[in-house]
Length: 394
Ligand code: ATP
Ligand code: MG
Image (cartoon, rainbow, N blue to C red; front, side, top):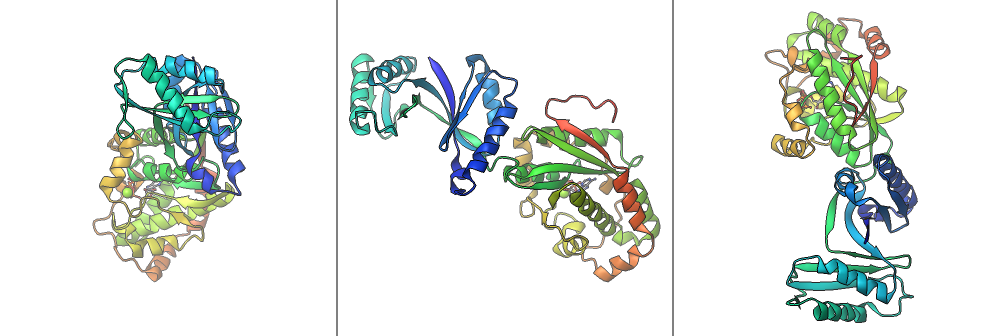
């Protein structure tokens, strides 16, 4: 028996004008993610089919479960769209199942098939009742719900629909730049942005020697986990030490974090513009810390005109942690390595910073050349899911 994976597009179908673009992007994602498997992938406007080798099914399902743009899929047995072929295949597949009640749903999208759906439902139901002992029909709560889709090219028989990741295929939106720290929130923010089709670069601000190589490794691991939802991710590592030290040398204690974040945003703005990215994405959540009150966000955000997308802005920490566990970033995020934000935390960071005070404080050192230097000395690595080592960078 030949089996295929049938992918339904779900939410894509609401995008009428862009439909082909979405389908083609999804097709490329699937092709790319399954490049190490001997599969045949076909697509039309309603669905995609993947012909696979049985031994690879579990691995392929694990991969498909992480491809955005797939809402549901089925593993279906395929046969010719003739009455005889459908009957014999159905009997063979169903005989392998243990059940006592069943229901059959025939969908005939190939109107050339001579028997109407309802009539064929009865024909097939009768066939099973006659050939398999001790079973009966239950249309409300069947043990086995058999779907038979008769299409022109083939007929598909399956019992179960799997839930995909949903969202839009990565790459159907423009690029965004994710501020990726080693914390819990930013990988979740990255995952949620990618789920809407945003292709991401990541930026990590590090402050060696105040932060350790392990902290960097942790960020690379998080980036690798995120890259399993796309093809690869460029991770830009910015040396933030000189700016951070200067801020703590020159500025008021309570404004250090606010100014530090304004500097980060300035660098993000520069990087977006030089890397063809249209939005900044980060893991800020309203009220989580002093720099994430709405007044802080306003003062920090004002250094850039770019939209800042904060996918977890309205989530509770527990809700964010739940997603972090689901996407397998949580255990890495809670490793105890210092981040550059936590190293220099002042005792009483300002909760409602004033714009004029920020501007005054920022006059105390010449930050523009430092931002220039941070951007030009930045290190970029390409992170893929299956890469294990970054010997030259760690
Ligand atoms: P997370 O929010 O990811 O759990 P965190 O709580 O340490 O980490 P916050 O102080 O809440 O980080 O910072 C808010 C957001 O700013 C982070 O979610 C992240 O997007 C960004 N950010 C903070 N520190 C860094 C950093 N060192 N490099 C890149 N982005 C950072
Ligand atoms: Mg946070």
